[in-house]
Image (cartoon, rainbow, N blue to C red):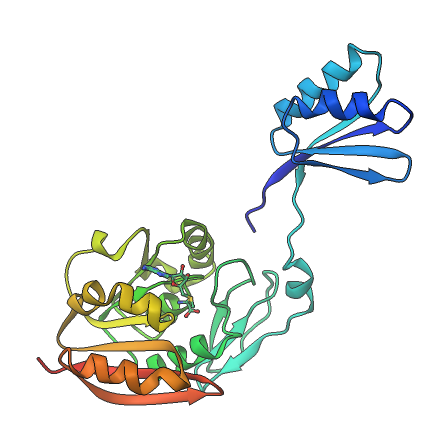
Length: 276
Ligand SMILES: C[S@@+](CC[C@H](N)C(=O)[O-])C[C@H]1O[C@@H](n2cnc3c(N)ncnc32)[C@H](O)[C@@H]1O
């Protein structure tokens, strides 16, 4: 998992705390915390922490410095406690730390350690999109996954036989995670990733899949629809149940017909076929 580093400068507390805070503040710490008898300043930049320690030293104030500490990962405990689970008939998803756990016979393993990137299959919208892909596997086809997050849908498409899948996200951190996830799968070689806007991608695809909220989708609707080739299919997930009919109505008026739908709890995924 990608992590940020930080440094801790520990100064024993005593009457001169104001001087310590005043001197250390000159080096732009992230903040101060009191730990028992110590005052701890945390820094993002290790260099700044070293200079702060030197400035204290020149005033006869002792301190101890630890640099390059990996910031805690809030999902560490979640990954440790999580267990693999099945989605539909085809997939088996492991959101835990990378392991050698083997998928049940006949199922495709998607190894997606929980991270800040959305898409470990825990959310209904991802599961519905995975089921829509499995309903009609994109064998031999090219698939565009708009808002790829962890890369889950692009990987699933490749696993189901897509000739190639392109995953794209405006969140560069998510694409970093997705790239790590590709390396965990043999079929990851058929997935290409891109961090950036949809306008950076040319061409049309027989299958375009997007799992995002309606407001996110409609903000880029023109670009998404332009990527669906004639008679191609748009799989759109992440639609709250109470907004389904409005979303479908708008897409019908853009030359698409409803080819299928699935719902789980309050979430809906629709398949729309380009008719004009
Ligand atoms: C709900 S997540 C879906 C992640 C994954 N595809 C899944 O099914 O679990 C939506 C993703 O869309 C991305 N996104 C939002 N607006 C976008 C846009 N205009 N272009 C590309 N990606 C976008 C977000 O950064 C986020 O990673």
